[in-house]
Length: 267
Image (cartoon, rainbow, N blue to C red; front, side):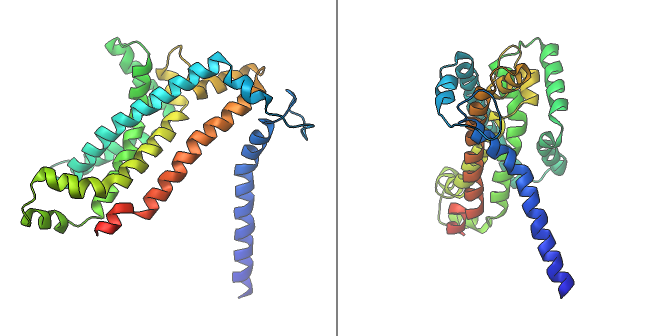
């Protein structure tokens, strides 16, 4: 009994230490984003919002933000189309190599980003495709597809085939079944997959490095500014903004995935 209680206490202390290790640096970045001075001393002598306007009026930051948003939105759209189509194909049809196809679809997110980036860069050079927004979208879509695929196929596996059989018995054709059963059933899975895909795309650094060329997305601008060390107050503000645009979609997606949404109501 004493050993069990001691184990629980030690596990709680260890969990608390891990959480502090993970989130104290983030809290410090948020605090320094409102530091009035451009010197990051501790403790901050005064707080101010001056660096918010400085970062917003920086044309390089605006251009990087716009490029990140474009890449994230286009990559998410591609992931929704291809990821959901792949999930339907793997789930609804039985064919030779089905499991291998499923593994190939999931594999990109398990590969180190540097391998994916180098491979894509080599492929683009081989076909003579100049690095641009298109190559960034292609690079981001390789791992965004995985997120949508996993969400959609997990939802499809939770729904009984008897629903489709009942719709067919009632005379519903394929398009009507898709509109009244499939789309409501997958709505939260598609939305959570899209939010996760956008969050992954927005803060991606390694793959973007090999597919962006001379262009700067917001994470690449942060990386460059940190190396120079002359815009640290602006960097802190931009990092906070990136955190918000990453954490909020992930939180909403987790809530949607956990709730089960329309699929539970249908089943």
